[in-house]
Length: 520
Image (tube, rainbow, N blue to C red):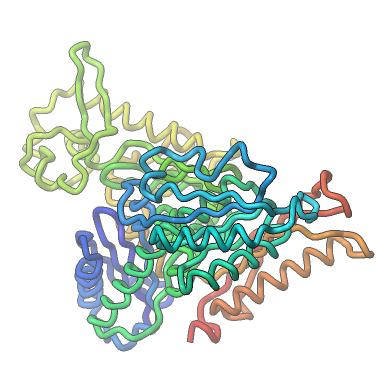
């Protein structure tokens, strides 16, 4: 049986066929506006190159940047009614208060504040104002708003009011999609609320995108289930993606990092994924991307759902190299992007790019080296030194220990990477150009629990950790993981001194191989 991994990026769609731990084929195709045709082209190319029977493909895993790009480009976003349960508290900071104006315009100015919400110890701030919710529901219907996001103060501790508000809105508005903040974010009301609003605004796009993926597989005669990779490098079902598109926001860099770990066997490393326009840099811990511990900015909005600690710099294979009148040389952040095969000097164009510099320095063999033979030697040397410096700074920023660990270079632009950065060895694995699709193909199923436990009544910290671990394991099994392959990859507990009842916040995450009852 074979696995098909697909990564749909803004420029390229990559596909790989894998048999157990072996990559049989890897293909790059251009991403298309309708998604479907680009996926079909990459998929058919990979199947043909591998020479396999498509009926023996048992699982398809897809990574996509569609939803991130929608937020960044302010496209394909629906109007949302943002309902916050928190009066008389929280009035000074209304929903979307810190959003960029153009994104706030894209989701509409439909913010409602309602009496309700909880204190940090679970006591109500005020009783839920049910009559106000009925009035809001009639306003939503009159405006023709497409989705609703409901956020209650401290709902991760007590979600009862969010559930009650959802029932009232659903009863009044019919089958309008409703997102609850406690299903997505963690403690931190503005960030959790923003994540819920953003998720609600993308529900229509996610339904269309998931349908497009399904249609592409159907047209290719592939009938097995398909999964989509999420921010932490694990998989969720197509049905889950339809409900929670924001959980895929960082799946592109995450797939590259997971693919890099798989292709090299390294569990602890810095991964540098160099594309045509940007370079994504992040650290691997136990073979998974290190998670960001702080607020994550998406399209100018602060959110607090789980995301890998990855940052980008404006350096890629198509980055422009310019020399000022004073002789100084700049590299990027502007890039020719997917037009590199027409505009770069080595391909017959007239734009000097980082790829041209790499070829002129004898570090890469692409295009026609004769076309960059006239590049000024001093200019090339200075640009090469600047590229080295940019990569070295980016890698140093991701290091959390002085111990030397390997640097794994992946992505089509990794010809820019030197053989070593300071005291760190650089590894370029086989199939490095399609590491993102490999990362999708090898993704596992995860289960997670993140909530507050009270240690009163004789409960011990160990008992609460065991309970959380069991819940996370059951969540993974329900999602399709094999019970005997599940392992814990994250376990933390933080005593909450400000809460009564000797409370502690416990976060446990487990992963397992695909193949449980749901997956079949």
